[in-house]
Image (cartoon, rainbow, N blue to C red; front, side, top):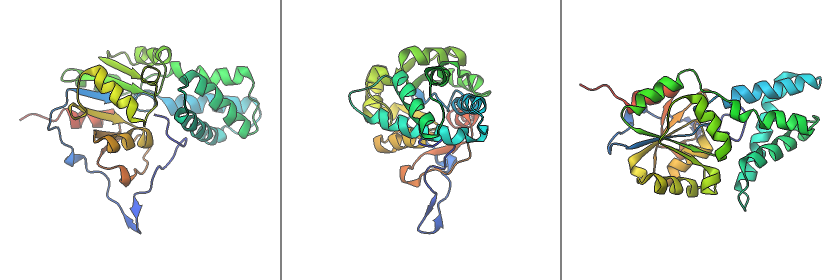
Length: 257
């Protein structure tokens, strides 16, 4: 997911002094019926923030700094990673991780030796699912095909998928697409790979800029998993808003009469 700030509020819901209403989940449409539910992975399915804040906090403690600074360091890293992901030619995510963490640590006056950078970069494959994720995915799998769209490399995401413990029909990586979200190139590559149109999918993600913006630009139905209680960006509506994957499953698996 990796938004542009560590624990951000991306995009105010206030416009011209008036408070914008939250996206209404009741307005979410399952017609046409989707064939594939697609998911962001980092943050949405697995514990991106929790793991990286813990690891950065440990680095800060070793260097005699306040662990509370971890959020700011992660914020800085996110800015670097977004910039690096937009560059051409395409760079592997493992390279972006190391370059981004090295730059973020240095900007915050922290020692950025190879051991420290490796500690943070190699934390990514260790990330496991949020507690409700496996069971919610199992329920969704009874009706739909499942896919992951990830700004990651093939040899990184395989470990996260294994930790989730639920089979996915497709795992679409930035490495294979040669593009990072929110680029339409990754999404269009994914639809070709899966043999479906965008109208036969729903995208579920925690990322506002990386995912909901892409859904808006492409005309894809989106469900925003707002785990951090943020404010969304009304410029990228329509999207439904839910607090976790159970909420997404409730929209995608409505009770039948």
